[in-house]
Image (cartoon, rainbow, N blue to C red):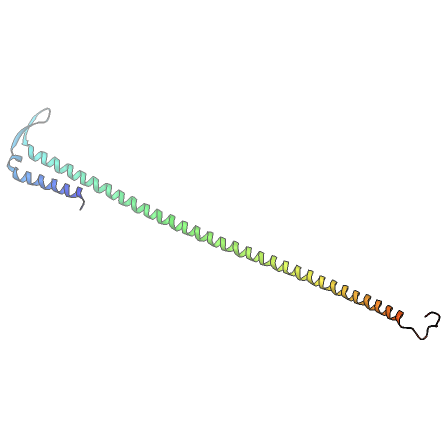
Length: 164
């Protein structure tokens, strides 16, 4: 128990003990003034009734406040849970959106890579064809030059001797 609860229980116990020890005095009639008239009544009993009424009122008020706090706490907990679920859904949708964005970006990069690869292959094929053509032309030119040199170096039997 809390210290306040123990202190309250102690005060109530002491008040009950004081009332039990002085019960005949509490029941003794005394003249009480109501402002316009005077009445004979037991003052101790009236005061004890007022104390019991105030304590009961305070207990009811404390219970009312505690129940309001408890209901507010439950409402806040439910609201917090709904906000947490909303945040989780928003985070999940952001992750899904990010995944879709990354997949689209990967596909786009893949397409660009394929296009670049095809362009490089086409360029290499063109360079290979150009190189083959140049090699063939060089080979042909070289063959022609060698043939021409051979023709110049070997005397032809059909040619007149004067031209030799």
